[in-house]
Image 1 (spheres, rainbow, N blue to C red):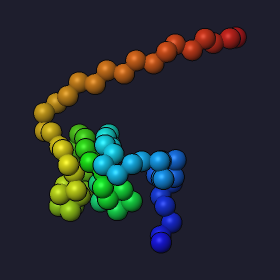
Image 2 (cartoon, rainbow, N blue to C red):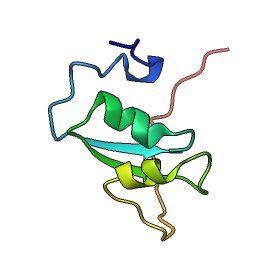
Image 3 (cartoon, rainbow, N blue to C red):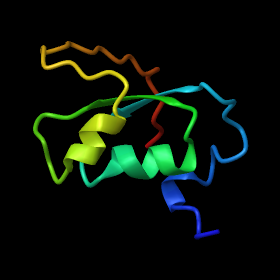
Image 4 (cartoon, rainbow, N blue to C red):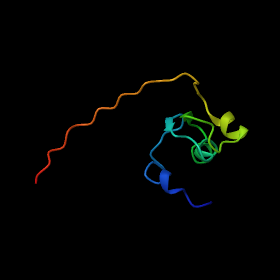
Length: 82
């Protein structure tokens, strides 16, 4: 079997079949590579443009929306010491 890509090593063997994967910035053929390693997953991809994705990549995406979506992420403030 081919070598697992670095970006999947931390989840390989931990995702159950049917897992939902959201890929923000899904260019560079990420949909087909993801479906190769996790064939039973539900893959949703979002990107600002169709960057280096083939028709096979677009077919691998379970959900894709052309609407603009606002995402807000909150991170806890870290204390800094000087």
